[in-house]
Amino acid sequence: MQTVAVGWQLYTITGSALDLGLVGLAQFVPTVLLTLVVGPVADRYDRRIVVAVCHVLEAAAVAALALGTLAGRLDRAGILALVVVLGAARAFENPARAALVPRLVPARLIARAIASVTSAVQAARIVGPALGGALYALGPATLYALVAALYLVSGAVVLVVRDREPGRARDEITVESLFSGIHFIVRRRLLLGAMSLDLFAVLLGGATALLPIYARDILGTGAWGLGLLRAAPAMGALAMSLVLARRPVEHDAGPILFGSVLLFGVATVVFGLSRDVTLSLIALVVVGASDLLSVVIRQALVQLRTPDDMRGRVSAVHSLFTGTSNQLGEFESGLLAALFGPVAAVLIGGVGTMAVAALWMQRFPELRRFRLAAS
Image (cartoon, rainbow, N blue to C red; front, top):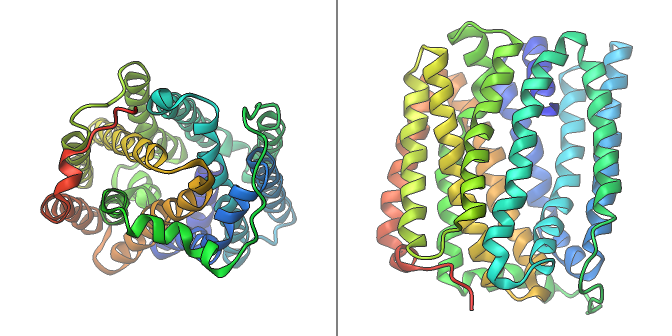
């Protein structure tokens, strides 16, 4: 709901495709600046508390969006500044949350657990954008207030999760420990290949930042249409996550990973060329399903190949890769749309994604052969 509200309100104020891209950049910058700090925090402190505190900070930032809107003083700079705060909170939240999941289930169930958690997230991503598009008619301030309340509920809920291993080493934070997550990944080509594949493929294929333009100017729908377009990738992702929760990928994970990235690029091209709402929704459903498949495979690989005392730091670097691909990808899409138009921007991204997948097949042959079966 927050994504719909911020995107629609900002585009209403400025009418600028570049500003939509700046929303992604505003979330990306804190991830980069805080990468070396958030990992050690997740490894040193109770990960549940880290996530809960982040939700409180996110609630405060969204409440500020609501108050600024009510006062009539919320402008482009104010929106982007508060999005930076949200990005900083998520920079701490994501590694702690990702590193918490493997502590709750046996190693043999990690892939299934990640898929199950993701199915819940995707269900929210279906209901949220559609509901956000409908509730926007009540005004962005009302929508922001509801989002802030839900953040507080999330913070309370995560605190009741029981960590089966509450004890945690309190090693001294040094320069070496700050960079240890990066060193760990660089020394393991399988992890480096999987993360960099996502980085460059999704960086080029980030068409979702342009959905407000497609909804208003190309497909001719209003805020309700934007809500449906936002929800469509989550619908595909939810369907895929439910399948993976029952039948997780274990054998032939490498070929399936590359196939999902190629399908992501093809579906992005179809969406870029479409002028029909139904076809556009179908293409976005495929985008979401294929992206989710690659996400679950990659996350399971990272968690299975990383010891628990390193998971916070490795997850922080992983979040940097995914944040770069998602948030900087939104900026890239907005910039290309401003230079060449939204359709050309989406097509360039889709074709580029397929090219990256083909190149990585050659550069990382071990990535074509790996399995996810845990010992």
